[in-house]
Length: 440
Image 1 (cartoon, one colour):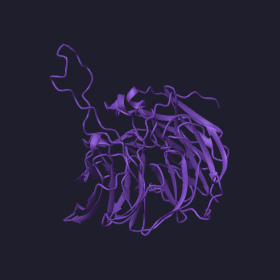
Image 2: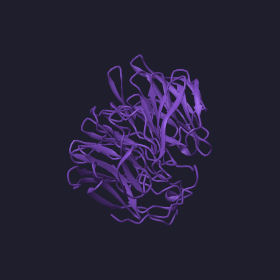
Image 3: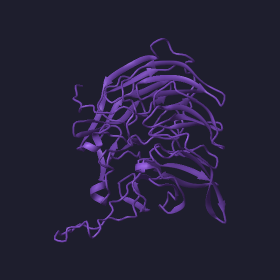
Image 4: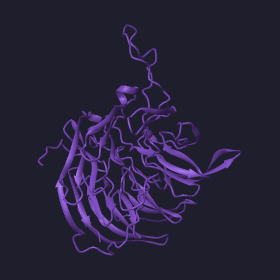
């Protein structure tokens, strides 16, 4: 398939609030599949076995590679098929590929013009599709959400979230990935703030209905796209939500532009909130939950990382801050948790350090400058790391040290889409290509 690509005008180590990166947990079946953002449990940890301890010179065996198109959407895997989003010019595509060969099975086009602000660091798309049963859910840069038949790409229903609900498209494009709960699909939507009287033209006639501010989050029924609930007044977020369970109670955790919040996923009601503000409202990385009572969040620029402990008091959830530090700043990447430590790439405009941090105390275990700004996943006792320059690394991390076992250049700059592992096959994409590697 021959495609044409818009001009690459990326700046080195630039501001990129577009990849909604992450760590968390969610309701998804366990197994070799990677059906959503962050993998089966939305935490970039997968139960894979039998991976190689070291790669040959030049990197792991490449199974196939092909051109795809622009974008930072990561790759979902289900039933021998790959699902992602890409762009050619002013059109975005939700695409299904054969996992063994990379051949296109089907693709669905949506007209989605990008602005100069969107194109500054790459025009997207940025969100990752969600595969549930026989359906695929995707959201493009301009907030058009599709529900597609997994087998043939037939459009079952769709919503233009901006036009239908008066939402405001983020300046650099929509990036949050949808999440499933019961029979619903839950997505951040936000709303367009009304103009002040001074901003309005007194002679203009506005016949549109005012936007509903209580739609920071919306839940749609999977079967027909009908609205189940919409609630909250937070500004639109780049971060992807997660689902957790505290004392047997489900809650949705969302990293908004100024705070982290717990939401009742059944109706959108607010359960708790804790402040975490950053420059540009760029809270991008997905929160981390590891099954205990601790939530880790981090952002770049003038922000940092903090851990909030959740506990019930008098029937209500009370968040308590355990620690805060500006030493670890996750930009648009992700972290993984191994035991009491989180590991990830910290940095924004300047140099990036791969770091280990004690999740209970905030103490820094070590900082390594062996890779550029990176994303990662954890499988079979090893970290698989992809930096933005296209370097793929196999490493081990412990509280005592960080050891790179193998490293090879496999992709081109800018490789901001996090890698995907299904079984022993690793799927990687940069801004023009998608490829598969055998890690067995």
